[in-house]
Image (cartoon, rainbow, N blue to C red; front, side):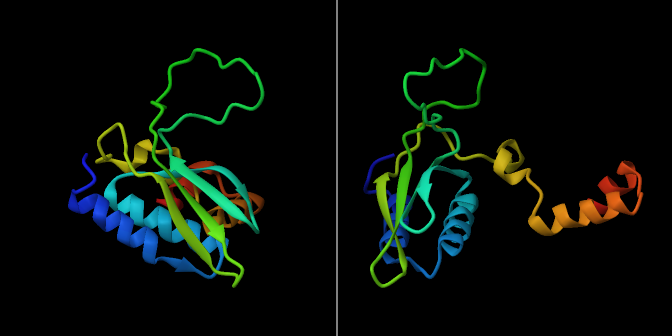
Length: 145
């Protein structure tokens, strides 16, 4: 994808003009923006009150030290996409593009991304409450659907 495409310009405008009041607001909005484009983002590195590095969830895992990586089958393909959110001195969060290119096509079915198969915090609490009430797992699953 070349840098003159409307998609990249749209992304660059979004990233340059976005300000967020909190870390959580930044994560939710950026993930929603890229979800609509067919990409899922994961946190590569962060410090809750300073910065967050987001990468495509098809990127590579962060390898700490000289640990050997196991050679396993994986959906990870070293996608280079990466953006950084930083907290400014005024307390608002801003985004900065490190690399906006992907080495794969957008997903048509987002259920293939683990981050979109997770239960929301409300659903987790609901499952806990139903489990404590003695409701069988089969009924819990059907009520979640």
